[in-house]
Length: 226
Image (cartoon, rainbow, N blue to C red; front, side):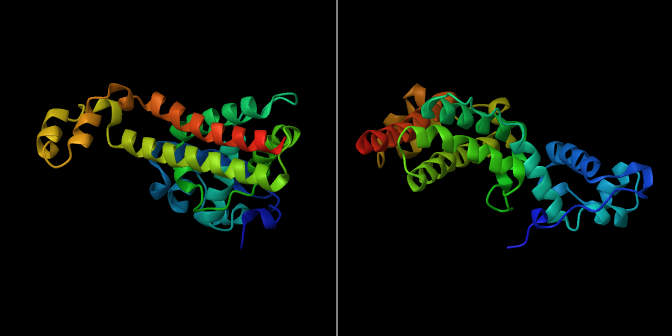
């Protein structure tokens, strides 16, 4: 596995306009927030910075390396749990923060798993959740698996939510449930009955339900270990 974090950044001395890795990452994040991963181009980014395209490669070896750096910046926006927080408070707060950041930076959540997330801010975020879980009595393997499980739920939910919003989401007309029901009333009556349950159409409600289910599972594991 190759990663930008395995090499030291080059010095910025002698580069035009005081170009630096930090400046490149800041501008790249602006582009990513506005246009997404597919629209990020080193040539266009260089133009935004008023620099020659090759000068970017002095500081960032590849486009993938730049994305790695940007991903890590977002992990730095997490509000880390306090030193005395219990594990449920810590994990619940971090998962709400993860969802919030996914909606703020849709490209970021789509990049999780596709690009490395081993930068110092990503590692600090993950490490901050171990303390409360280990104090609760979980072994390191169980704590790590618990964090992975709950993060996977939130990332999966957030990607679906981000995709829904990118298609128009809340600004689009709601689906015509009557027409959908007419299509399936005879063959799939249970599905049609589900359409009438209003609470399932709340994104907040669905997120909280799923988060509670995963946390309840971890609680059961903690209780079993005591």
